[in-house]
Every structure is written in C-alpha cells, then in structure tokens.
Length: 333
Ligand SMILES: [Cu+2]
Image 1 (cartoon, rainbow, N blue to C red):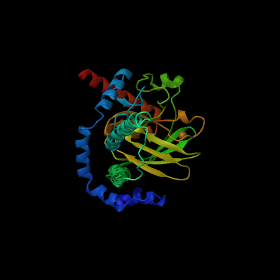
Image 2 (cartoon, rainbow, N blue to C red):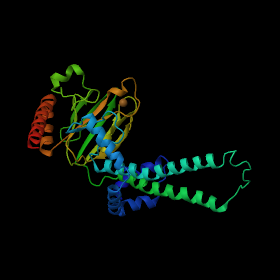
Image 3 (cartoon, rainbow, N blue to C red):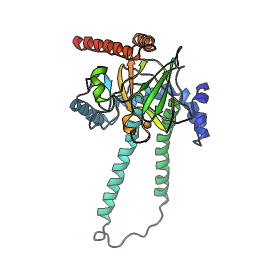
Image 4 (cartoon, rainbow, N blue to C red):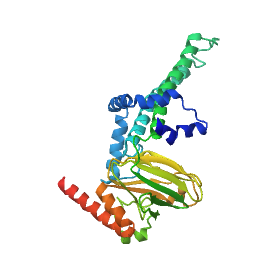
C-alpha cells in the first residue's frame, strides 16, 4: 500500500475524487484473480468482429513491422505494447458488453411502442401511472450495471497509479511550445530536445523510410528506453499546459508549468512508438509529436554512454544496429 501513498490515490482524494477503501484494498488482494478473470473474458469477448476489423484495417493500411503509430481509418486502439494498455483495452471491450445490449434493448422497446401504441392502433391510451414492480426493476437494474462498471474501472485506475515495482530508469519530459525536452536522470544527466522531423532534414537524419518515420509523427531525437524496464516519466512544462501521451503504452498525463506529474510504463516490445501532445497548447499543438524508441538493454546502455558526448552520432549508430537486426529477422522468415 506504500506505493499508493506515493502515486496518487491520495492525490485523487485531494482533488475531490473519493476512492472507496473497498476498491483500494481489492485491487491489491484480488489482482491475480481479476487478471485470470479478465484473460478468460478476453478470450471469449464480443469484439471478435472488432478484431477482424482491426486486422482488415492493418492489412489495408500496410502496417509497419516494427513500429506502432496511428493508421488510416483506424477504429480500434493501437496494439498494446504494455500490460497496462492491454488492461485498458480489456476494459474498453468489457464495457461494450453493456453498451451494445442496452442500446439494442432501448431501440427495440422504442420501436415496439411506436408501432404497438400508435394512435390508430390504440385510440384509448392506458391511464396507468404507477407500477411498483417495474419501478423497482428500472432502479435496481441500472444500479447493478453501474456497479459492474465501477468496480473494474476503479481497479484499473488504482493499477495505473500503482507501479508494480521500483522504476529502474527515470526520464523527465518537459513540454515547450512546441517541442519536448527529455532528461535522463542517470549519473551525469543527459538532456536533449526532441522536435518534429522536417521533411528537408530526412535525408541528413537517415529517416527517409516514411513507414517507420511518418510525416507529422517522426522527430529528430527519439526518447530511447530499454525494453522490459520499469520506466518512470516525470512530466512538466515550461510555458502552457501540454500533455504527454503514448497510446500503445496506455499513458497520458498533463504537462503543467510549475508542477511535476508522474507516470510509468514498462514496454514489452522493441520498436518506435508514436504519440502526440494531447492538450491544446497553441498554434503548433498538432506539430509536437512524441516518439519513443524501445531497444534492448545492451543497445540502450551503448546509446546512453555515447549520447552524452555525441547525440546525433549515437542515434545514427543505434538506427544502423536496429535496421541490421530487422533485416536479419526478415531474412529469417
Ligand atoms: Cu503541446
């Protein structure tokens, strides 16, 4: 429970969102049970059609093999690259089990009433104004439905504020109009700026492959992090409110001047992941993308050591290594 103090349930209460003790305790105790239940439900979930749709979209959009980014006509979430995002996706699918049947039921009831009780078919309307049984049903029903939504929702919220382990790497992201500063809180801190990649700079940066480095999403210097490593992100801003968001990691947190917010992620897949500033912050709000490059532990260590003296050189070496790795993987298929 120590982490909850540090990570935000208290914070939630200070901003006036009550967090019932039931949910706080349950989250930690029954997490494994919940996980098992979710996995079970996930295997049997409705959106088989959604999955098909997503697969179809991926197929038609020609997905890149080693990155995740928004795709044309995308209707579902980007593929999860963290356990947290998987749980968020699960919760989204779970709510569909309530939304879809309720919508259909209401639609059918409405259609039935329109047809069955139209003036020509039912000239003398009933004068009934009370029916205890029906009133009990339409009160208790929604209460039960809301409880079914509230409990997993609070558990998920608690989990987002409760990192399962200590962070091994801490990076600070500072939003500026209209780019990001990243700072690695390691021995001899490393800090650099990350701005949108201009088309004219593509060749010089070796980023001509638009599938991997898409227009409006690619940046000059990516935030490089090691795979399967608990990473803490401290988020702040220098001028106006921005928001640090990475859809496939399931994180989004406001960057507020004069305040440090905190979030965390543990990326499970290597590759380049793209997000965007998600708080309207001025005229170039749409042009301050966030790119995170997830690499192996060894690659990260080499990059970090080299980046402290020569960032562009370290980035180029890392890109060459990753490209080589992908070519070997493709040849092996
Ligand atoms: Cu912004």
